[in-house]
Length: 95
Figure (tube, rainbow, N blue to C red):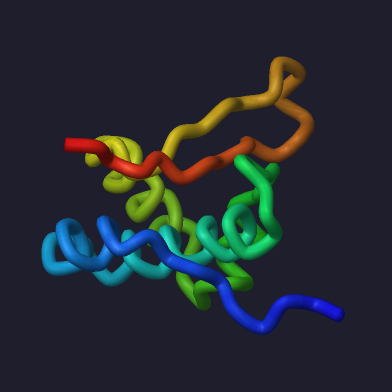
């Protein structure tokens, strides 16, 4: 049976939610779902998959990713061949 909940670390809500754009919030939630929600540290997620999950246009997904990377809330690992989707993981900020 598939789990019915995805846990979101409080730090994302308590310390970062107010400063995130709509695109950043949607993309972050999609990455959280694909990682924490599936009990994974990271996952290969294509731009197209993020578009489908968030309902955002390609440019908005890219903008959301860029903002999250700049804020240090996610990390990415691009495939060496450039064929496979980029792998994303959430970075839980520590004070």
